[in-house]
Amino acid sequence: MSKRPWEFEEPVCAEIGSFYFYLDDKDERGPDSISDYNIAKALCFQCIHRVDCAEWGISNEAHGVWGGMTPKERAYQRQRRGLRLDLS
Image (cartoon, rainbow, N blue to C red; front, side, top):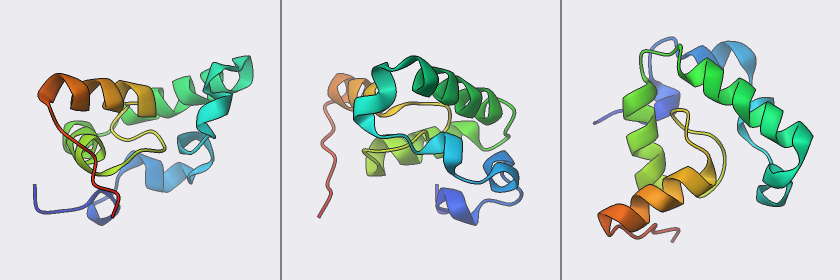
């Protein structure tokens, strides 16, 4: 994939803003944030860029919802694939 998610043409998240996509990791366990993540995930599942965005998130992001995947879900995929997140 050559484009970064914010370079995609007409992504669904661009219509909404980042509120539902970036929650503090510590809040992920709270009832409000779980419903917020569910809103973000539902929006992602309507987007034609979901798979590319998720793959980018797995490789590049520790925070936020990317391609319908939470930080924990992406961490699991990195572990499963033997990938390390380079935050330098």
